[in-house]
Length: 267
Image 1: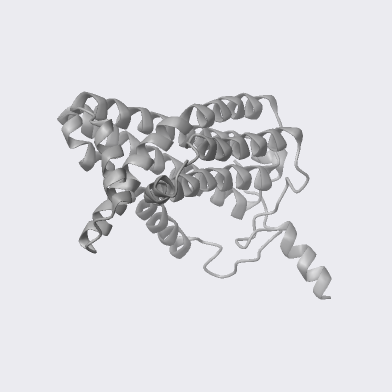
Image 2: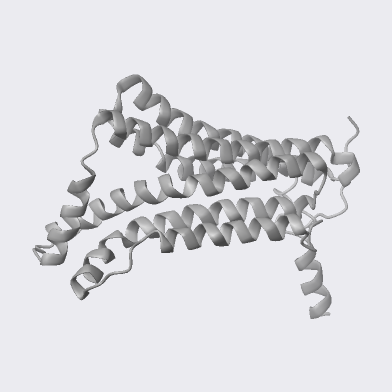
């Protein structure tokens, strides 16, 4: 009985969305390999320390590295959930997946550069507040000062970062739009159609966050890149508040979370 219940839970999500992609295809294996290679690039992009002092100084960038990994794993999870939910391998999905992988690889170096700079700066400020004045700290500060970016360069970096994230979320949004169009072929029930529309609206909102950040530096200039950066926490807050609101207003989940065979509404 327990094994049967476990098998049933494995075939559906916690919200009752039936998994159609439990058997991964070559497309998903390729995507996993690209994500793994992207994480590898984050590691090998850093020079191996030659002395213990350099090793200590390199530790100041670990916050930026954590941010990079979290963002990449978040994108991987979003991509994985799409294929788990729908199991789509049609030509249009492949056409969307290929630019997704290209953007992911192209996105790595701006991502690494930006978060290394910001993460090191945050950690240095924390250590200074704690009274640290070590030689490793001074070396980390010197590395930050070597960047010495002007306003135009900050504007360019902010736009590069924003464009990458915008198009990655846009492609995920279009993938779900394509799945919704094929709802009859996929045999989506009422709950799954509702969840798919929820995903589309959520990704549309996520696209607005980097768009707002880029608009900030385009209108106000690169001197306001820090303000543009503070827009990105809205990504998590917007996503969380949206799904909380949807769960309270969900016409099905308000009564049960495990409805499987709901009738598909006729268009």
